[in-house]
Image (tube, rainbow, N blue to C red; front, side, top):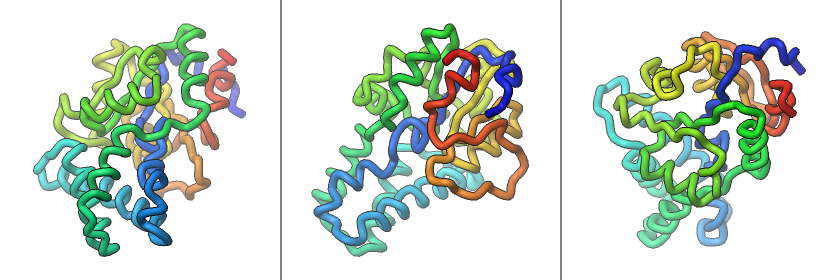
Length: 230
């Protein structure tokens, strides 16, 4: 575990939402019995296309909000796996609006707030999606801000998306510890200048990109102790 003094400038903890606070595969898991043996493959493809479409639309300068991208990515996954059931599509999208949060999340956010640190979400998610997820998980009282990239119209890892946190919180990059489970997001945030914790829940290999995390963790549970606030 790194020396807590490494993070003695940190005044705020900022979190990616999808995959970091919320389990992106919990939507498909709720309907596994309807999908069958291909459920995990459907969920993985849905997630992969969701991310790819954010990057491709940013490069094409053809922005669409994350709700639209989520729907289009699901349509692709269902088409690939030959699942044309309109009711299944509707129910999966509904489930995505109330994803399960990881079990440690509420207690970690509460501990950070009690220790005097500010907390925020910074996500590609559209404002309505994020509001629904936060409300469903009961996290609203543990957050100072919920920030969507929609206010700048470009997805992470564009630097303009990360700057939203600094502008909203009135801090410098080195006063923020950013948390993400996504290796590409870790690289983008570290390159931007944040302190970064990689929440590597599934032991993924590091991306071959610029920007290294300050610390790699298996969950968010150690974060308050890491900051000397546990």
